[in-house]
Length: 301
Image (tube, rainbow, N blue to C red; front, side, top):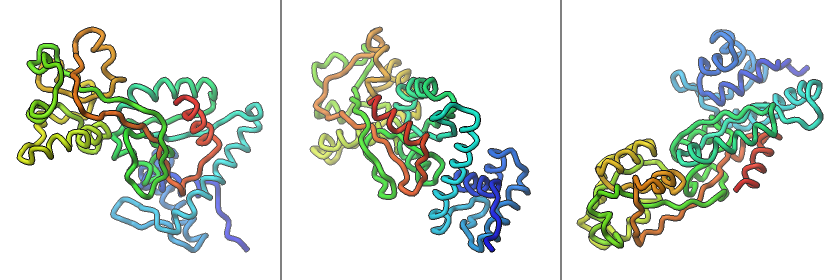
């Protein structure tokens, strides 16, 4: 006889897999930590298989757990659809979708898109997290996010990615900065300028450094002069407006400042066009809500 597996045990398994600790899963499910731990132990005992590697307090899925997680998610999603079909008009989408997005996308594009999607599907709960591109990929790899949106290309072989949209970075300065008077900023001036940049791991920083590589290679003794590293676009804009250095930011984030004359664009020979990409884990269950949001993003590109 097949050992009984409860709906609550599946919920606990999926929550621990997504959150990484029993305590975080307990908070998500509004259970006590002891009840959550017991449900997970009961599930592994019933199935006669261990699904996690215990690394201190953190639990990482083992190979068997990664194989079982999509099946558990499908079962939970099927139960949610069953309950929703009794309460909602046919075809209504319900459920929760976790989306991690890099700073530019998460600040300037995703809020409006999420609002529009929510108006179409009131039963859908989008959980948005703002990260840098490297952290987004980590979230998706660890099953902390169902879908990721990053700046630039995905370099993680364990993920699936596809281009979503295109963006252009601009080199900007205070109109009072001495370099703002140059017709074109290139060569020695580019290499010796003080820069206010995003932190390592951000898509913006990766694209900028790749564009600057030929300039720096032309004079091996030169190194990029990074005066400040800041994790927020708004902080970079304030530092650049104060004349502390040059910045390289998405055109999406500086439109208003350029119109008001608080910042100016500097012409350079740098190639600063980049792609925005969608990333997801190939082993993660792609629910009807996931698929609907993916189609929505494709249509909005």
